[in-house]
Length: 261
Image (cartoon, rainbow, N blue to C red; front, side):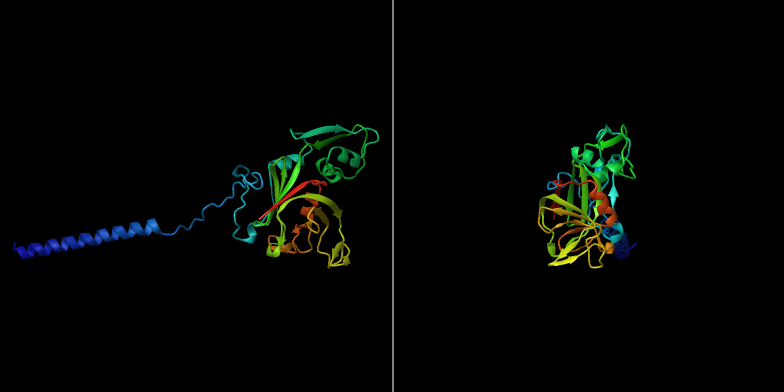
């Protein structure tokens, strides 16, 4: 065999090996550096501003939501237990005495008539002597997260339920720690000097008003439920009517409301 023939065959072998090696490297690079199609989990686990509202153990994620279809109200087993008639570690049983009324019992125990009726499945305010009522010892507070358009009801610093809400456009919802000052059923809307009664198509407050220490601001219902989940209000926190009616049962004047960005 001539030296030239040997070199030609050797060159072909080297060239071929180079092609194979190049193909392997290309394939490896394609696999290693291809952008993942799997969305990474995005869970906001804890916020020092709200005392650990967000916990993975409670399976409630407050990640940026990619679509309106994911905006939904979520409750917890603790919430369902609280509203059950069955006694638990956070409740006590009370025997109705002569002269008792739901209003007097609620006031004495720092709760509301609405919550007593919900917990005990009472259709009316009428009581019977000796009747047993379940009373909760839970201290409630509220956290509103403007960036998520979410309102969280907490009991003894544990998440009970989260609600989809609307907050203020152009960052108009105030941030801070406030207290509930007043509560109204079927509220009249006082708008720029005008008086808009409940039931008017121009009254946007819905069925409940929960006023805050920041004058003019509060949590209320809506006549436009399709706007929930957006920063669209004049600064108040807007909820579905049936959900603000539920929340209304848990709060009393003095209940703490924390609003965070």
